[in-house]
Image (cartoon, rainbow, N blue to C red; front, top):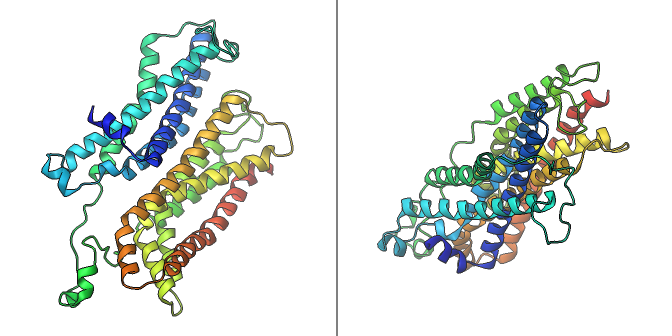
Length: 399
């Protein structure tokens, strides 16, 4: 009940993010129900039904990642002294965030069920009733237990992942430089002033190695006869298993290497006698590398996969249907939204520091210039990497 009351009184942007989580949950739930409908309508094709269900894991993971990012940026999950006095400490706020995430995802699952039944023709009296009866195997019955299990996967997984992410979030501690204890500057410093960035992320070498292994698997496992060991559902039956397995390994490797690459981008900004703006931009980017590096690596992998698919099918007929397109839109949308949400979380964490700098006389244009420099540095590092991975991934398919 408290989660619903907080949702009613939330800022419109917070409500918008929760609605986007519900939309992502609805899309994943719809794909899961489509896989169930295919399994019910084609009992002799059990292997194909299992494969369709397995391919739903990619948008499923993207939706859960987005839900976790939204939970981390929710203002109601941030500990405050007033809430602690009322008995709402960090543990109860974490539970509250998990409940809010579960409510949003459950709303999306209900919408997915209603839309699925409507397009199958099970719900009548509305426009487009039964418009996709053939695609969704309307003649096959749906097991109620299987429907409930599939629709609860996203809410339960998102709530659990949000709980783990919020409990692992570090708590800020007061830190004021000793040299400024007797100065008026110390009075203006926020209590949660971030320290100088600590040791760099350690996942860069492992991420690069895993991405290289993924590209090697994609090139090596490709079969010369054009048949696939693990075909994709629909009309993507000739896609080699090495493409899927290799892209998965490459995506995990880029997600591991992303924080290290973001950290190196901050170091590059501070090289060769930096000024105040470049120094500020580099230090902030180094401090935020672990937060935004992972989503940047994931979206780099997704964009490279899209580029590879365009290089393979861009000039010919598209061998995919509406469900494959829906999954691709979900993955692209969720990864992009996760990146933007992580950037928003980083902005919220440094809001007090920015206010202190403005009170001390720093021009607002300098802060905007530092933000632009951080974006430009990340673009310079990740854009060529995305293009290179895309070209290497598409090479075995087009050769």
